[in-house]
Length: 298
Image (cartoon, rainbow, N blue to C red; front, side, top):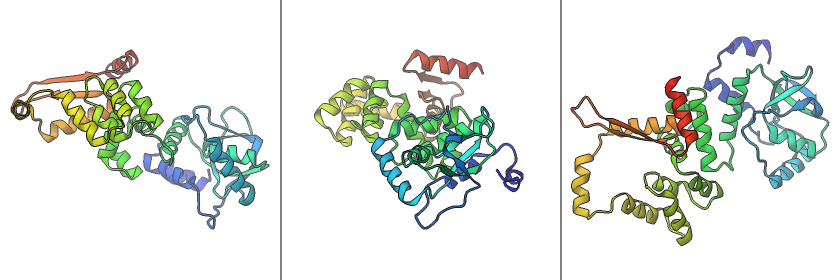
């Protein structure tokens, strides 16, 4: 990082500053080749061992390698000095381009050097991961959840910096409360995010998810089945019951915030005018329970 850049931001970079660096690393149009700090031999650049992204599509890499072979790397990678090897660099953002450059047999790669801590490297890697066009809903939700639980960012801040609505982030993170099998259907594309959201409050989401896939049901049909699964009473009794337990908007918003922050289903039973109530947190595995206990005891 240049001295000017380092002095301008100093320590304790916020999410907005880190997001600016991710944008610096984003692919540029063909006619906007961006200046690099250095040209570094490809063998002196190493991937981040804590990179959350583990899978790179082979066909997309081949396409990128062909483009790089013809035009070179238009957008420099973001790197930092390697904490493990003198004279080497560690990738902060742009590992896909680094892999494709090796396939294209480039000897040197343009880089932007930044002075990031280990924590900031992971944070930038997660932010960059969220920007991917091929991201599935579970990966997206996991990225938001990590930014909130690991780094303490709020839904409001993520929405502001990432250009998403707060409700989009809250709804995405709620998907992580679904059973693992349902999440796997979502990753594989057998269920859409709309289907999955309809299943969040269903007692036996796995059975209903299998039925939705088997019959090829629409989101609207899935929502109807979910209402039947969670209700199961005559319309008149349902309406009467609904009036009794209808929650005010503030309570629903608080439930959504807590569910997103914990990545678990949260229910608040609080009647207006009362000072007492009940908070219910539902976990899907013993790992979830361990994580909850760690959060509560911290």
